[in-house]
Length: 250
Image (tube, rainbow, N blue to C red):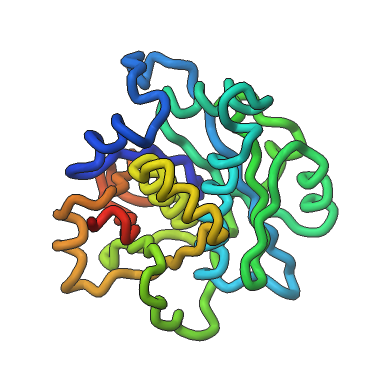
């Protein structure tokens, strides 16, 4: 099961993104005509100790934010040009899994490993859609199915939440890519001070499945909304995630 996805901003997202968020919003190159890149994420799944699903999802979302805020991905940093190229085209993410020697080999490539409660996710600078490093290309996409041994607890006040559509069933890998999209949309929407505050807090966030009765209001409001391109698992245009950052409700 692939986790290649494309994001779309929901109602109200674009104006603020143009003011404060996406640094490349002024470019008008057609996304489909631009060179296509993908952001690789690798989740560590050992046979004898796989992470909990929610932990993996939250760690993947944080990994995207860590990369976007890294000095190497900004300004004149060594990853900045490829990050710009990736953001100018369709925003694709692919989640693969690794264990043992595969995980150790992946760790030798330039990237950032982000730790959750038990989950480990390594995010890499974007790569051409058809130009994956061999150490990552051979990793499996399927098999990223994880469970929560216990229900996720309540979200503390003030913590950003990435709400999953309760009507959709997605593999853990697919959902990890989707919440990564949601985190990225929230990042684009925030101003500089709000971004820095989130960064200083370690990009604290929660991933939860929205209550069925709350989803229509969440998805129909002015918070950033992820719509999937429909390459895998779900229908094109499906609303998958709402990024509910407290600063975006102001």
